[in-house]
Length: 269
Length: 280
Image 1 (cartoon, rainbow over the protein chains, first blue to last red):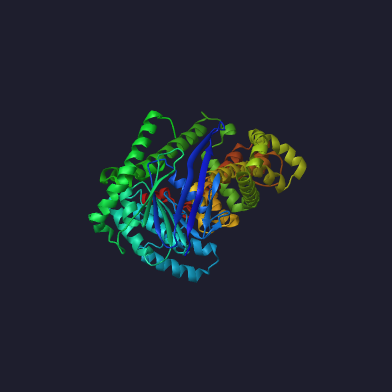
Image 2 (image 1 turned 90 degrees about the horizontal axis):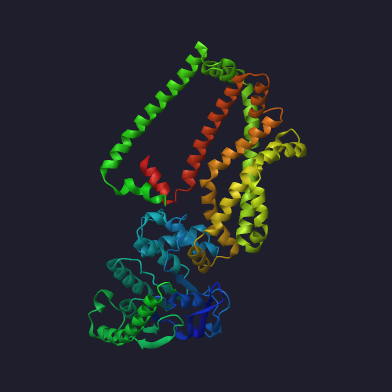
């Protein structure tokens, strides 16, 4: 169990001419131990930047990432990261990709092969152990990534629009499976998406970011839907629609702002 | 890029595939006819005096010469020397190219400092180095190895450098998040990525290694195929010159087939590799 806090995080990028481009400004965000928190916002609001800071891949310009109250230095070793793009090594088979985290930790071959085989079965890829990533569909590659991230049993899971590239049906199935995997594990999840629907269905809390640049937190919205949830039917429940309506009125404003900015500066970021 | 047209036969229905299965046979036939016509014309020209056999020899004489060498067995000693030189140049050049490529790709400052020197060294026509290598390393195999090295090194170096610089950042980040330290990143991410570039340039490297050995021998040696050709040229034995060329071509072709097989096996994880095996 681990809790993640982003305290007063500001992250700036510098243009080639030395000008400062603030991606996010003064972000306060808290993922209590064992909870599922989603970050939602319009395109280009610095959601991925925030995740990279929580992963320790990026050092914030100011502010601090704290894990169980301890400031993060360097890479966040307690976190697993499911990237938006495909992170599978194309020259390794499904089995070797899934076993990679264990291999890096020096787990003996027999042991890690057995463990990876079990995870491959759990994500429904039995029979594809010897396949290479390019031979799999997008959904199957995602399943492999999920197994690869979970096999090392991280306390914290960071996910960056993990199902964004999938078709709607596959996506809902994967979301459902993700929840089933997560339930009862006590892992803290920080989930980034631009899909409000997905965010509400999965999370305990939705954090809304404003349109970029210099995004800030617009609001924190608790989601009071009972668990375990069945995602294939949850979207029709009154509590779901209520929450959706409440957050959407705020999100719509940010989306419109973002859209106006992007059309006003077509060559912008 | 090259993926698109190659996967075409997989996605499109029967029509293009049927044509492509009949075409190779036709191509082979035309190739054979062309060889017969060209060699026949050459032979006939030499027999009738249209082509002067002193300068151009004739196919039958060349085949005879190659046959005599093979029966006599002397050719194998020369061939062996040339191949040893080429393989040493390939090995040393590859290892050095890999090492330096790695270093410069990971240490940006070094790459920036050395950039003009690398450009100068690479722009130098390598043949002018052969005489100086003869002086430095003598008439034995090492002057040829050194010469082949300068050719192979730059190919492997540039491919390694490119291979490491072009690695997708997500792969690096993902592997780091899974717990990889710098050395493990090298082994699991950078090396395989660089190797895929090096393997796809391997037949070029092999060709250059042999060019290095032969040219080196040609300029000064006491054995090897290049030496044989240079000897024959010295006594105006055009038949032996052509025979030497034939032997070299056949050997290089054989090596190329082996390299191609190896490359296809080692790069089997690539989408294009899969399309290849599907078509054959």
